[in-house]
Length: 224
Image (cartoon, rainbow, N blue to C red; front, side, top):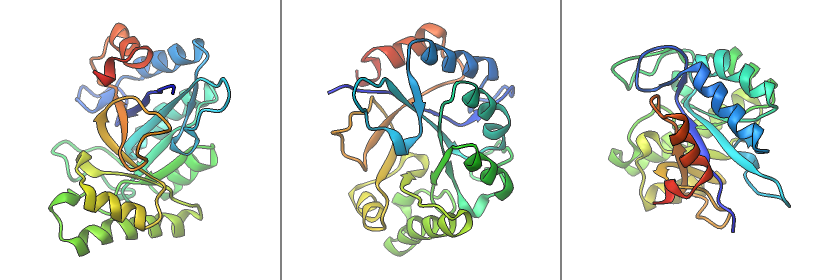
């Protein structure tokens, strides 16, 4: 069964900080995939149909620069992507990090959706769910889904584990609360036969060379 990369990013922009992918690098990477006949999709369209060559595109946290810098590039190739949103931090900054950047507000998220992109939940407050009580953990998972659905009038089917921290109890709650997929930060390529609540991704780092990006997307490198 064919494996595909689900790329994940945080910021797209010119800041000299570890979470950023340069705009020119992102454009090169999208063109690299496009020129090889691949179609970029969000988490809701990962199933391979017929001879389609797909790859996933995801952004964690929902930064404003995803809309300002990544969206025009995605649109130019008719690619789709999923942005994982922290509902209680919409329009604020990533307060869980030392260095903070602006997160999309409600109007910007609506624009992201109106352009054909999708969103998922990244929990209510971006807490480490593995360190919370069962009640608090459940609230982070369930309330974030409800808030996003009520605010934007869409179904929220994808949950991305904050900090990549999760266990069997957490994945069970994600499933029980009605999510279709649980997204991790574990390295690896995705197969449709994989556990839907333990989906691996391919990190794209600021200093990845063109050769490293080729390795990550065109070979089994991420599964090693």
